[in-house]
Length: 193
Image (cartoon, rainbow, N blue to C red; front, side, top):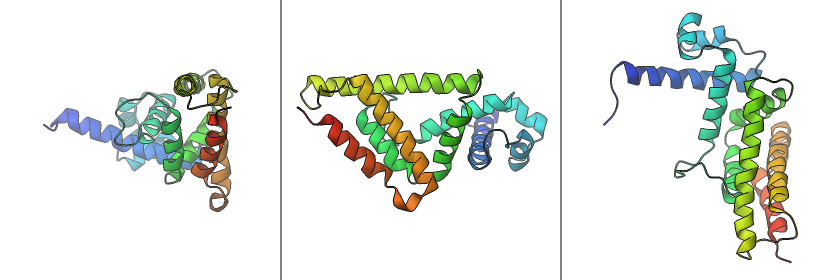
């Protein structure tokens, strides 16, 4: 049964705010995005927006989490990552230039500083590489992937390539097929000796 009343309206407004913020952060970057503009776009006062998100950084982190959730296929019910899931996400990203732009710019901006965004990305990369390495390790043990490269190293390389391909694609989308290139790399990495 669908939720009704103030709670459902609050969730809907929160979603509207996140969608507007995702667009603004993706288009303008973190520093040039204003809470005032997001409030205006969502029909709120700045104080009304602060009811939902008390700081710009809190809103930014919620947008990043939403970006990760939107990068998950609708039929995926877990957040356990694998090589296949990474390859699928890279393929889906070609249809989401705003999300890719947001991720690339926000991950780059988070390098400087000790804020919540920096911690978010450090934790996210640790988790992602750990998850994908677990999948690679299982494939190695099953004889489906080469043991010539350490699973953690292979996972780190795949994630780095995915990120680099996103940047190349943003700069020249017509000449970069992200999904094809990362799939080719994985086929090389998994060849058994």
